[in-house]
Length: 134
Image 1 (spheres, rainbow, N blue to C red):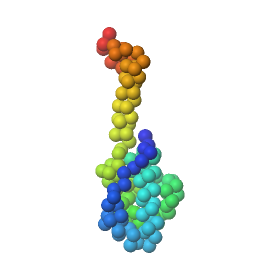
Image 2: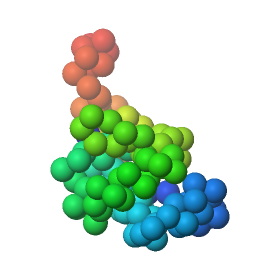
Image 3: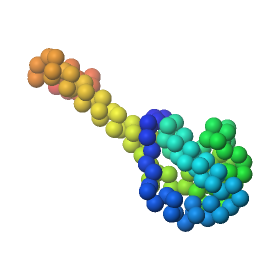
């Protein structure tokens, strides 16, 4: 699982009906902060929106915060924790992150090869590709 140094925050988050409902609950402001921390946790650890029960304290949450987030529909319950509702619709998944990193890695290898060898050198290619050329 690949983590990210950033997450996407929609500028309409404070006005979202689920967030407004959350803010109307007891300790809703606290739960809203836990939701933001959950987004950051999932992005950092590449969990694709899954928040394990053991991580609740790490995201500054309590069981009540988890219950509040489930109640308003921002979290979906799971036996081992929660899933952030519609996470993949708004955040980059670990699969996409891995694909981007792999493309950048290959481009970097090719660029270094061309820069330090010559344009005909194929050392940057994967072994399977080299066999096909020879």
